[in-house]
Amino acid sequence: ERRLSLYERAAGRKHPGGAKPKKSSGPKPTPGHTLFVRSLSYDSTHLDLLHAFEEVGPVKTAYVVHDKKGKSRGFGYVVYALEADAQEAAETMNGKNIMGRKIQVKLAANKGENPKKSPKPKRKAPTTSPSEPKNKKVLGTKPGDKKAAQEKKKQESSSDDDDDDDDSKESAK
Image 1 (cartoon, rainbow, N blue to C red):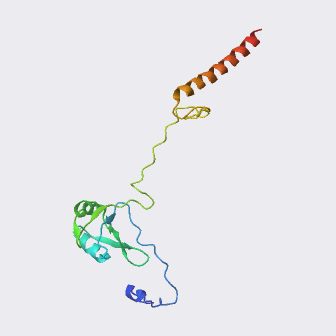
Image 2: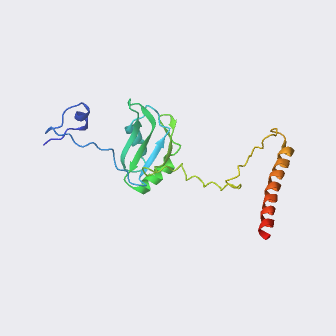
């Protein structure tokens, strides 16, 4: 049974035998072999990327990411057969001009990882007790009247202490 070529499939011809082949989600990148290439010209194709990166070593695949309308998004991926070639290409191709644009190249992160986002540092525990708010408003004072607020707090705390003293005196009797 003859398989259709890429060009025949793109032209919309039916697959022989009536059954459609399963859709592939693209090549399965091997960690350390894939490069992320950004700042590509919007006119660049996978062939431009392939030819530029073949100078370093044998390239398995090269593809430019497109939006739903088919327009290039300005970045792509290059997958090398050998990890050493990928690392060399990341160093030598970074900053080179391709189609009039200075590209940025780095080893791609594994799918699902985002190297930019590091875990957030844990927050410090509050220094004030949770039952007492930090900015407690005292009724009957103006916002800038700190002295009156301090006196009011002293009165509240001393009245609390007085109640405790009365309780302790009664229990001593």
